Length: 282
Image (cartoon, rainbow, N blue to C red):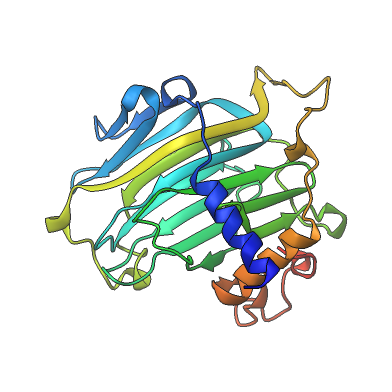
């Protein structure tokens, strides 16, 4: 086995056994679902349920202007076609900023699609989609959003799948001025989620359940117009983190083998030329 593969699987092993003392009771509110979202095990587990009447969701109690959030998620098993499980950051207002993990369900035996996007001032159109190299319904896996003034890095079990750099010097918008709250949800989107809406949700399999645990939030809390990091830069690696050569190699491996859509290579969608940031790894 090559050194890269040894490092890769070591990272997966470490991610699977990382411990957290996080408590959903102190970090989040179940925001909607009329009882379909439940905090269990003394705050160590949160389950979201979806039936024909409604889905469910939760959100962080605090807004953040930059941060790193880790979440372990076990997705809806079996026939999950039509369902969407999410974990994302979003600001308020009509010109919002947003950083997305969305897991698009599929029929039994077919892989989930992991859909990612970045919005700034209400404008997205920066989609990248992936299949995963494991069954995300069999066990919990760690999904992470790192957001600092220079870049956004999305990782799965400590393996980077996407980097979106701050390319304001090229005239590209970057989310850096609006505090965002963490959200997660499970909802029905069978008008588009699976094969463009061709496959509908099988309600005979309801209720559908996604499980969340080991939430870990490091960030610049934002309240009443002020950030906890205004006077002193946080003493944390995430605030200045960059992609080292090993991380870049792992990112290339994922994007070569598991990326199924990249807006940066969609010349039919952008006949006048690909977006400017695409030359800097979006």
